[in-house]
Image (cartoon, rainbow, N blue to C red):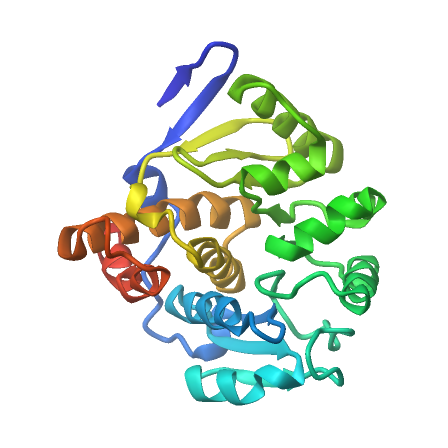
Length: 288
């Protein structure tokens, strides 16, 4: 349903919207039917973000997952996510390069990567080489905000998932929600990208500047790692064949719904990001 805010028309994402996007798996499916995702994430002391985002990719139905990490994270990831393949960077503590990108159907980058100088160079080089729409989150966005010329090279229809402070670093300061939404619309149109600004009533814009508001979620999700899970969900949905826009709105809805289901069992106070992963299957069951 389209509604009017003070200045903008927007569409509120409801369950019927998501049901029209997500379909049951064909009976003759195999793992390659649902794509091969790449997650570039993690740095020393921040491997939890990598684990959460990678688990969410698998829980979202991607057929295959490869994780690109610094050496310091190899044991953590191999132990925590046995279903994934792992490629290890030559740097011990930070990502300073990226793998051959040609075989992946979806790429997520940013959770826990940090902003070391070698990582900044690697992300800039990656953006100049990647050709498919990519999901950018966390420190990947902070790196882009320090070198805004990179926005010109981001593949069209990519998805950016900043929280409000990360978005402010990208576009500059704003006084209120209407100003922020205007800036978000303009950025989506200028660079032909999808943008999801996380928070209460997560706001999403597409490459034509249309506005979409998510209807699921609760304050219990205001916890470290929640955004990493969202990045993984969107990446997993792109891998299995959804368009980046459909993956963005579906991912936001499923992420919030998982939080709502978790609240029913745990309440809001004790919810963690891992709970969002653990209840994601129940979220899919309610939609498909």
